[in-house]
Length: 330
Image (cartoon, rainbow, N blue to C red; front, side, top):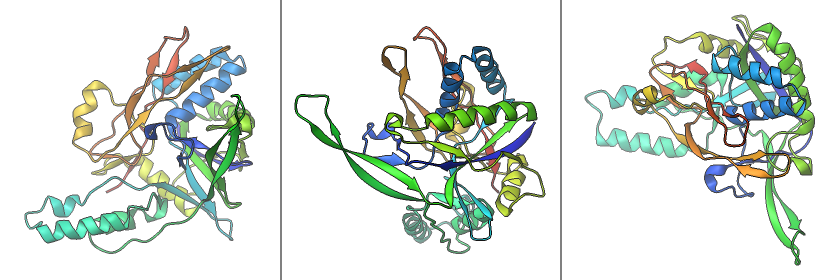
């Protein structure tokens, strides 16, 4: 198996809701989680009548023969260099905190630094080391690029007797930005996955698709990652994808730990994210059961495999993808 990068170029605004904030239409995210991506690909296969391929897709993902990261921002500079960003690691100052001379003043200094970097959500792949070094107090880190123009758009609900206004949050990606993902797969699977992504781009991803949101096309064909790299950042990403011996492993996908892995999770640096959503049936919509997953950016001492939750309450399997994909940090 190999690692591939695929890049999405958006043709319309996107609305990525945040269920953990109560489903408020005004609140939106920028990244697109791997569990939602997996579900979108499954729905696209089902709508195309590719049920055998859908079953194969699930089994390959469950066995780890296909794996996905979340979708994260990328930029293209004036020289054509693609810059790939990853989530800010959820990692404290382990070096100083574990030392015997960690004092109250050190804790206050670290707290101020943490507040100063609270607005930072993404780190360029080639600057991961610099960011981690800043956490250790070796130097300051400043890098906060902009990827989108955000706006609140007024809409009108005309379903009731009296029209009611409401607002929808949206992101419009700049001309030189978009989202990218990493997929681990065999070459034969990449070919049909590319076709499914093309169909998915016509349908759109995220919320408010019926209003034209979330449509995209592939920026280029997915390219295979290697130690030489097409760009500086994919070379660094590839090195870290292979580095399973690093002290800390950062998840770049949503992770649903197996029961036996809970203890390993609690020993790491992590955050939880509420996951819910809806299942679109032929004549009605069913709300999915909510659960909490480990969010990307969480860091552990080892690579936690994760699992795919399967429910059958709707008469057919419904999947919640939670397999881990990781970068070695330090």
